[in-house]
Image 1 (cartoon, each protein chain N blue to C red):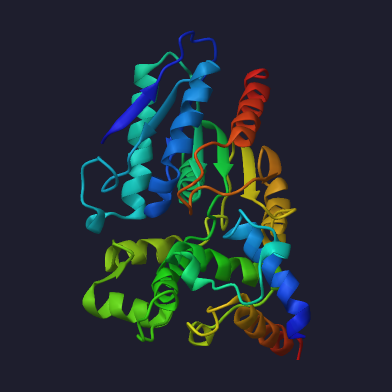
Image 2 (image 1 turned 45 degrees about the vertical axis):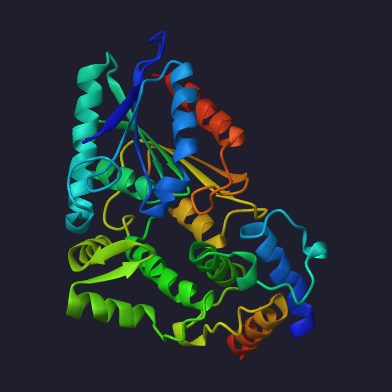
Length: 261
Length: 86
């Protein structure tokens, strides 16, 4: 597995951070901001480990054989590496989009995680993969192709042929099934750690559906802080390279948490 | 209903996928597909419209003609809103 450990010049915080990246092209488009944020957090005294999930980026493994369970194991490996490589005793997971969902899933089963920082997290993996498949439809809408497809026809193709190609990414039956089986990660059990969630968009407020979810989570998690950050998203476009508002919010959250541990 | 929908659709577009223009600067015949909206952007626009207006597009309802301009997209949205209110 390939990773980068951003170590602070002065280790004055007893909290290390593992960053969980988003899915497919969202990983590439958010790379600049994730790197800059990791550097900014390290400058504040927090060691940060960024790593590529199996089959992604420069890590070992084949994308076509990847699954959600594999990626949860990868997070475990990353957490272990961070603990063994730094003097910190508290571990936070910071995740963007599907990475946020993976971080939450991991924390549900691993009580060692002290803090979750989730940027625009994906909570419903089945809905997410269906939206991803929708990109094939969108590609047809913006081209001269006359092909008629639907998400259901693409799922049928996955089941019959074992795979579909969506914008250069192969979605295999194994990968699709692992998303579908994961479903909503907020069902059945909840995390036992502090939770920080950022909604990110140019709309004046977070979507009602997310606000309702946050209200439900607030009653179950140890300590939940939620903020809507009115800035342009960056994981779905390739012209956003800075996000000072998110740096500041995340640093504030971390410092607020660290002051009490 | 369609004319009322155009400013709202423009607002969603400017808040999601064409963020370097204001709604007032977008003409009704602004070509969406022709202005380099890639498939990720179009997918996000579809989702944003669904969240903003509270309906779900069926896949078979989505056509290249509907996404040709802001005016044509607003017609589709108006139809969806009308059918959601029935």
